[in-house]
Image 1: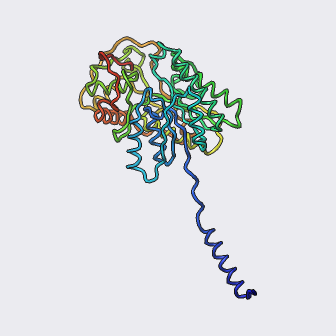
Image 2: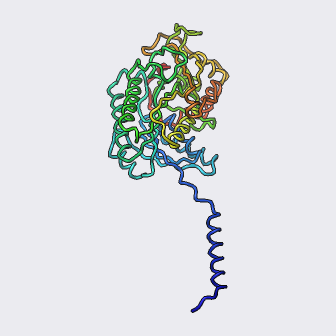
Image 3: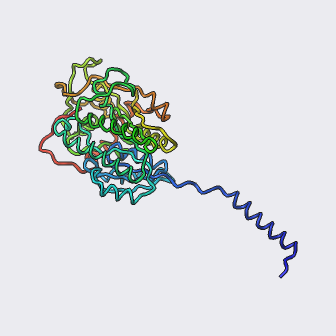
Length: 390
């Protein structure tokens, strides 16, 4: 069968139209990133999950729930679904970071993972002095096991949850990242040892690893919705949750450890950072790692301003409308007089800086506590009320 030149021309024109039409279509968007979050059901972890999900990032949360509640993630999902049109998805997997079998299984289940935010670990300064082997086992052995599994499954990007405790009793104020590193308690030493481990690991395989170490100062506050906040099981080890529980009537008074430091009012001075700002810092760190090579860098996350223990107690008094009862007692071993950071590097490297002040921290903490007087409702019964470790 012969095809006329006119028919050939018509066919060519149709083909050209098809090609033009297909080329005018925008390419499909890349799939959203998926991030592994160890300890993601905890206080800082849950707020970070909220920040990431709101930006469209999907998550695999790996947590043993030893000091957290699955209710936190349920509430995170509630906030996200009400405020975000295209949120990321969250997948929860129960497990201990020391359990390589379960970890490897989870990493095999989600082969698209390329980034891990590592929160999982024990964090009570006082307890670490009583049971140091437990802290070394969970915080160091657990992290080594996690890193081995990440390497096996080709996950090179790591954001590590470190702490200002690696500066010990600081020699410089405000504290820059290149200040001398040391620690005054087992908890701080576990953070410092893991930092050194990460630096050695990067040096051994610089073409593979891409690491940001985030040194937190003193996270406090809660999400402004009042749906998620800090809910320690048992007796709080940190100042703000203890003060909050005194304010809501669960405890009698706050013990202020030391009133004779060389500070303006004699009590310890700290850099209190709102947990929402801190969560945003993790989101910015992940974006930085996923854009390209960073190496292995440590970054302070803090406000750069110091407030005393009494400043915080008085701030909570203003938030609640009534004074907070407290008693000044002796100093606690391992505490330092003042600790606040130089946050310049965070802004230069990550484009991040704290936006919320002490009033925001106190107002949001009180909103969380008054709306959730029993936290997430999973408390260990106590025979008597004990005083705070602030």
